[in-house]
Length: 304
Image (spheres, helix red, strand yellow):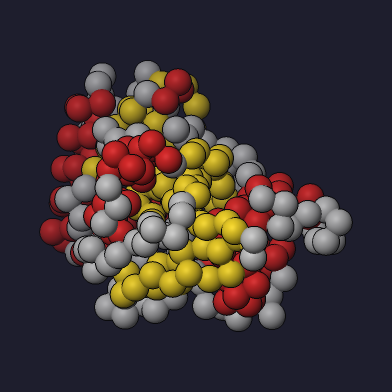
């Protein structure tokens, strides 16, 4: 059985960015936006729209506007995809993901599949739907479809999804709640509650990138939501992302997590829920403060 601290460590894999990384910069904007590993930098056929400084180990995206910078990046990625430079680009989503700068300004967008190549934060929203009665809290978990390329048949939060450019975390949760669990949009908006953010920095392996490159850096910014419901609210499979939904008691969910039946990230989100609701406390968990710190660590780059 894995300890709760070990669950955090399996997600938060990179305490510090290696000095060999190249920092991603954006023309006219202060700060660091991502971290590229050296093999990625060496593999791209950079155009005049980028400045690569091997001495300072930086890659700067040029352009005076978000639209221009995004276009430059898209051209670079399409060329790399056409040439088969990176395996990760074969899973092209046609879904733009934002790169944030100061004050939550979107400074550029890139296809979702390219996020790990540039080491920019991946933003997503997760919703835990739960009941509470005299027997305690029980949680609706989604069982991932067996056809999913990543963690098939594992359990996760009730609803989850990446946040594309132009969408807020709250809007993402509402949309995904309908798409994945057939939950009424108005009902979700009226009852859902924001519950914080889980942050960590992970590193890809060939499994997490569906056969793509390993060793890519991905800071994760995972917005947490929860919604308390009565027995009349039952999530239903809608878009086949899940094979079904199961209502688990806290003890059943703890056992599933300890036995590895949950995806690593979702195990951390359940753990964050346990902490918020006083299920895991300083008194009953020897690594309590370490766990809280690992679930909410600084990621060292701009994020939403």
